[in-house]
Image 1 (cartoon, rainbow, N blue to C red):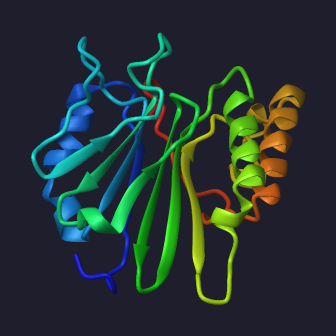
Image 2: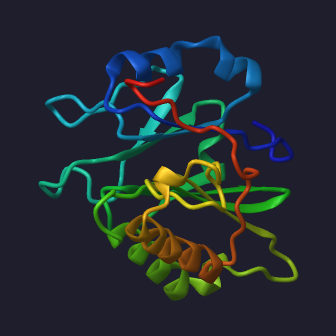
Length: 207
């Protein structure tokens, strides 16, 4: 891959389905779209702790993977077309986050593949701490353009990004939890990329 090329990311929660994950990595749509990075949440992990991949993809596991009893809920696949000297994994203390850095003539991209638990804010707290403790690494400088990107399943609902007419999603507890996420995003200096109301999830039962 030439340094001047674009980075294209495919992000999806596969709900631990081997069939779904196999369908993604074997589909020629990734090649047609020029996808370099696949960010999976709730990936398919076998009994030996390995995810499903093909020879065209290098699986990157969270830093603590295999060193703890906690389940791995995020895996990033790097295309073998992306030169190995243009990217590296960054240490992050969670089995729910994979952090990588990619460099090119356009600058530096720090990409966080994030799964956030429905029942707690631990991942959000760790992301906030990381950005505060690594400001030198993530900051813009005159000679270095740094791009930050969170691709994620945050399991949070708010009128900022959901359909505002779907009021069943916006309980007091759900809104309070989402506000913590909004604060973390603002703290990191990020902005939401998708316009409000874009459908990003198909319910397994109701479709």
